[in-house]
Length: 323
Image (cartoon, rainbow, N blue to C red):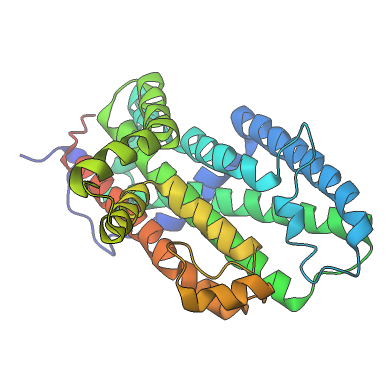
């Protein structure tokens, strides 16, 4: 016999979805942990952008993409803002999701939620979308802050090409955060204790951030060894290493940043002789071609997010809920 919380209800299985989304966003935006993260991001963005503005004031009028350099220009001791994004985005996503499910079980509110006209499908998707929309809101606010500081500090507006590239970078950042949020939700379903779920998600992030690049060189040498030093062997070794490194979401996101913030970049892998002429001349690519360059990376990030959410969905559907 099915538990009372799983009784058949009338209506769509997505009934109550947006109620869950709104409740999750309200909880996230008013939580102490989110306020701490927001303060950290604002200080980071303000400091790095202010330092970048001091370096870029001398090149106003000489550089066509001066606003994009607000994201990539560093000044000691502060790195560029994009250098912080690779750290801050996973931390924000994990902080929003590591206790989304096990927290309900620990507070003994899961059975009460499912006793309402809300299906498991709507509950899990609502929690995921609530966290994703919260991330989107936070990142959009940071982007507007950077643009505002640039307008005040540089005194010139961004051109249309820069605005489009910054919007694509914002979308890629949201998708990148979605991967780590979905992964944290898996651990939130798997482990009963929020601390264990948070540590597991952070361990996976550190593995891809620190240790995966070390393993790539070893695995590439095993899969495509260079025995005689022939050019074919070396090219095959490099291509294998690139393919393995792109398993990591960090690598995909880093290459997206490079292609969008540096319009002169014409390839994210081996550079063909036909590409050298434009690269030497410094001719920037139109934003459409840069988007085509990163499209496989963006597709991979979206696919990874969907697969991780599907895994979380299956695990949650199999989880027993008792009143």
